[in-house]
Structure formats: C-alpha cells, structure tokens
Length: 449
Image 1 (cartoon, rainbow, N blue to C red):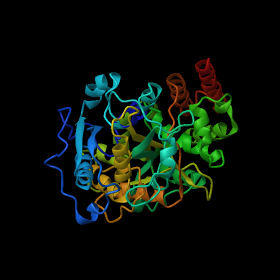
Image 2 (image 1 turned 30 degrees about the horizontal axis):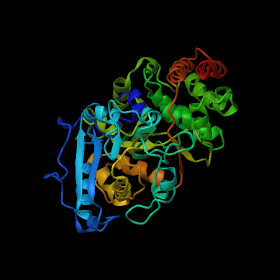
Image 3 (image 1 turned 90 degrees about the vertical axis):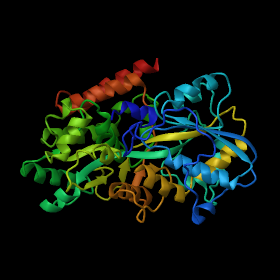
Image 4 (image 1 turned 180 degrees about the vertical axis):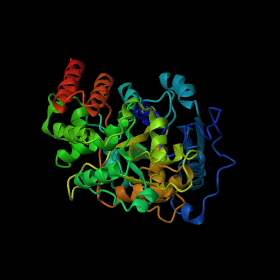
C-alpha cells in the first residue's frame, strides 16, 4: 500500500488494517433505509443526541477497504432516533467522481466522508466547499454529553486558523515486531532509543537484521522513525512538524532535525538497517519481516490485515509507536486520518451537526474497530471487543497518556520528494545529516517563492 495514498487519506490503504476495495459497492447511491442494516441494540438506542429532526438529509461516503457495515448501522440508528428525517445515502467505490458534478454545481450533500480516490480535503477547503466549524467544534458534545474535542485521539487540522473537517478514521505509523519471536529469544521490547540500540546489537548477533524499511516509499521510515525522533529531540513539542509542513525558513536545518537525522545515520552505520531496504517496495519489505529476516519494520496499522494471507500461523503482530525517545520520554505516534466534513452549501446544517455528534461516541468507536479492523478517531476501551490484539494494543498507547499523537501534516510535493530522496541517501551513507538539511531546505526555499 503506497503512502501516496496517505496524502489522500488515507488511506485508501488505511488503509489501516484492511485491504482497499474489499466489500466495495459498485453503485453510486443507496436508499436511506438500508434493508440490510443491523437493528440497534438497546444499549445503542440510548445514544441519540438529537430528536425530532426533520427535512432532507444526505450523506456521501466512500466505500473501500473499510466496507460500509459501520455506516449502514450508524445511519440506521440515527434514522431511528429521528424518524421524521428523510436520510439519503450516496455511497460507493467511485462515489467521489460521481458526486463531483454536484459539488461543482453547488448542490452538495450535507455531510461528506473524505477518503478514497478523487478526494482531497485541502483542495475542498481551497475551493471553499466546506463549512467553517471552528466555533461550533469548540463546544460541540457527542451523544454521551462528552465534549467532542476531548474524546478525539487526533485533533482536527487547522487551515489558516480555522477548522473545516474532523478526523473520523485514525491510523498511525509505528514499529511492528513478532511477539512470538521476541518471547522465543528472550528479547525485551525497547522503551527508548538506548534500549533499541542494545536490542538491535543482540538481534544482529543472532543473524537477523534488526530493522527493514520500504526504501521505495520512505514515508514508512519517516513515520515510524525519523519524524518521532524529530519531535522527541524538540522536547516533545509537535509544533516542529507543523513548521516543516509550512516550510518555515530554516526548520530543515534546525537542531532537533539534525539530532534526529544523527540517530537514523547511526543505526545505518552500525549495520542495523537491512542492506536491501533501499530497493524494496512495501510488499517485499513486509515479506522479509514475516519471514523473520528482520525483527522490526516501520509501517502503518493496516499491516496485519494487508498481509493476513501471507502471515505464518505462529506469527503474533505487536506494535510500539516509536523507538527514538529518550529514557523516560513519551512515545510519539505519527498519524494518518480520513476526515468528515459539512458542506458549506449544506441544506440541513442542523442535521449534519447532529449526525456528527451522534457518531463520535465510544460505542461507535468500538463498533468501528470490530467491523473494520481499524480505529475510529475516538478513544475507547477495546479490550472486550473482537478487534485484533495489535489494534487493541495501539488504542491503549493512544489512550493512556504515554504517547504523543502528532498533528496530521501535508507536505509540499516537491519538498516531500526531496525529503524522500535525501532520507534514502542518508540511510545508504551517501550523505550526512547536514547535507540532508541543506538539500531539503533548498527545496523548501524554492517552493516558498
């Protein structure tokens, strides 16, 4: 799964722990009262945030790797809570392209889930298609009377000081390992950079490469290693990642970035990175990991599901957000999200806001994990759910205060390309951290003109 889809958000990989396209619909629209939608349980039916909504209400959502079961059930419950509301669902695998003419003509749906091919949240904002929800979101509460912003794992991205969309699906990069392999060899999971170095030496001595990454798509090692290292070196202040996205002058040659690059250069010079990494695509690197030719791999939360057909029976996926923090420092997770928004020209803004308040609850988060194998962007206890162990473990990291979740940042395409190329060169020992900074800063300076 290519990280270029991350920028679209993701994920059509996303995504996340599912293979894109599975369960996708071929049609563009479905009726508002889906006959195959599950009936709400008594516990779920207690959730309605609003009653008595009337009029027409339309939701557009892309159907890809996550399927549509969660959408159908959630919308059915919202319908039961608002029987006088006429809900229309516009959904499918190619719904973004099919709905594009209506957006252009000023006749959009009320709520849109921004994911999949043909979607771009930043472009929709620049085209003035999304409603400014900055003031509303500050006080909005979900169906359980919890402040929405307080239950989110990843906070909404701010564009020019304003908020236009909310992350609905949450995923994050991190470092994966086989828990069974670690238990067999008596290896202790690292909690900081020094323990990672010590373990890597032990792993290397056993004849296994400590770390393999996807050199063809450096976004993986950026998300799992370099970016967390940058934030840790910046005193756990995630604003530096925002500065990078905004191409703030001098940021790419700043001390925190150079310190992080030194760590990446160090594990390369010590021989901890598999020598084949620079030429590997995502599938090849993941196969080496599954075959125990490498002990760790930086990747996204979709990994387990994506490789389920190739995973050995005794392989037990496990996850840690980062390995680059100092002793006692927090883990750092670099997220990718898919968002939901209200159209600026929505005909039923009241219902649109009510639906978002209805959907963003812990119960719906649990349902999402069970139905998709991925995480919804709401903190929830998944231990009693049927979600996979790696998903449960990831949620524990994000919910217990031990992990910093960085903001979602989009990079200028030219800067991103140069950053990718420079990182691969650094891991191969062809350039120094200082030269990495010079190259990327030059690309940023050019993009700023």
